[in-house]
Amino acid sequence: MKKCLHLVLLAGLAMAIALAAPYTASARAESQEPKNISITIQVKNKNMEEVFTEIAAKTGLSFHYDKSDLNLRKKINLNCVKLPLEEVLAQLTEQTGLKFTRKNNKIIVNLEPPATGATAVSAKAGEEARADKEIRGKVKDANGNPLPGVTVVIKGTNKGTQTDGKGDFTLSANAGDVLVIRFLGFTAQEVTVGSGEVYDVVLQENTRSLNEIVVTALGVQRKAKELTYATQQLNNDDLSRVKDANVINSLTGKAAGVTISRSASGLGGTARVIMRGNKSTRENQPLYVIDGVPMANFSPSQPANAYGQSGDIQSGAGRDGGDGISNINPDDIESINILKGASAAAQYGSQAANGVIVISTKRGRAGRMRIDYSSDYTMEKVMLLPELQFRYGQSVDPGSGKPLSSSWGAKTNAPDHVKGFFNTGGTWTNGLSVSGGNEIAQSYFSYSNTSSKGVMPTSRFNRHTFNFRETLKLLNDKLSLDANITFVKQDARNRPVSGLYFNPLTSVYMFPRGLNFQQYKDQYEVFSVKRNMMTQNWWNINTDLDQPGEEILANPYWILNRNVRDEERYRGMASLAIKYQLLSWLSVQARGNFDRSYDEYEMRINASTHLSQAARNGRYTLEKI
Image 1 (cartoon, rainbow, N blue to C red):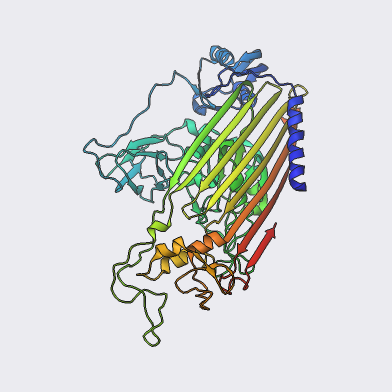
Image 2: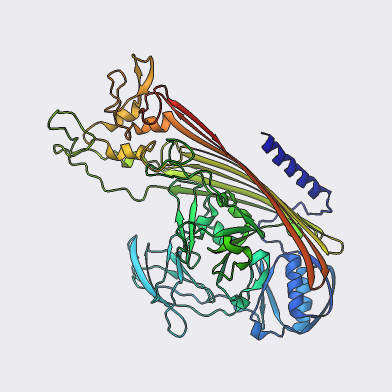
């Protein structure tokens, strides 16, 4: 509790600083991007490229243009004091003859007014295709050369693939699905799946995208065209279109050369990320950097032996406590830059040998107060089950006549009890953010809640995330302060486990065919006269008859309701960045962060559980990290 109190005090201090800072905002909230950003910029005989950079720094917007088309050394004179951004851009148009078009958080620069609409690529019309068919195709450039590594994703989902070395791809899709084809340096295209099975696409080169500003090592902003290594940037729309409790899972199929393996432990589980193949026999995970500061991507517990048990809990259930990056709220992320190769991550040393994922979070913007609210609901069902037989009943030992746990006995017509064991899972993700400020101080506050019920009975997950960020510019914009504080509270019950012990799936799959599974579901415990208490009820477990059962098999509903596993996590993260502009070309910056988590794992095992897992009167485990 003392640790939580410290975190609350830090949050209160940050809030007090924010309220003390000069701050003006309109009470009106808009759901769209505010269009009345006002800036102050006074330059004389300054290169156009330097003016673009200064406007981008003051507004948080980025300029996109083809460097070969513009005279970036053209001298610009501006004397704008608290003028709307549109008027500043209009003055630039008068001096340069260029067209500036604002789209979301980008300012697109053209020699001529941008053409309306886009080249549409559609599949051949025809009769509507049947669901879940396999489609294939080839992706080429304008010269007819195949493009390997192109990302092909079904719009609005995480389902996708990549083209092989010959530019070919195969994917299962439904009629009406929209395929989004993306590749670095080319304009993304969309193809609607119809009745055909072959979809060949020609991507057009997009030279303007190569001038996009990306965040590289130590938070330095560079133009993508000037980099000597591979990088890929994803914005918030790519991450929040279909939300996941672990934001890294949202990168699946969207980043070339990046393989993401989702954990089987349910919502909030660990994600394994491999960039361009394994490089070590030990650790291949990349380094995560949030707002310029490396983050320790720890996990409190992982399966450690052949039984799926954790090394830090003797004879405990093999569990995945989730990694550190899973605590980041997807709605708080502005962009993600994936740096590949040794040269990309050289400034971070050996810890970045497997690549770097640079995360830039949102901050307040000057202008009207903005309130955003989002709500998502996701349903999930078990997609694939092992092939099981229900034609043969329970086996019997030919010598003793004792019933066995296997099912290779006489022919029968047993019902399928496995499908009915799983539920339809559901996840609610709700988020609220408030941002605004003036040219001196900008504030950003967000709250998100994730609530989930898994496909396993009694399995649930809840998480609350609070985030506050304040940015200040003082001493005629020479001194910049950037403070951020995040608090996370999450709890989970009965996350799916690995291994044999405490795993209800082992007993579900191996339940003898021909017996009444529903009976043991309704009565997973019965009263024992011998022990004067409720004890486990299973086909080969009976306390009064001294039938202990087998060590790896137990009533699955007894495991879920009487061998309960609860997890809690409290985590506080705070960071502070101070930057002072000594000269127009020289600045000094210092960063620091605080990251503290408190994890608690509790397991309660009732009496009558097999003696290989607990003592005669049960077992209680409490672990605090």
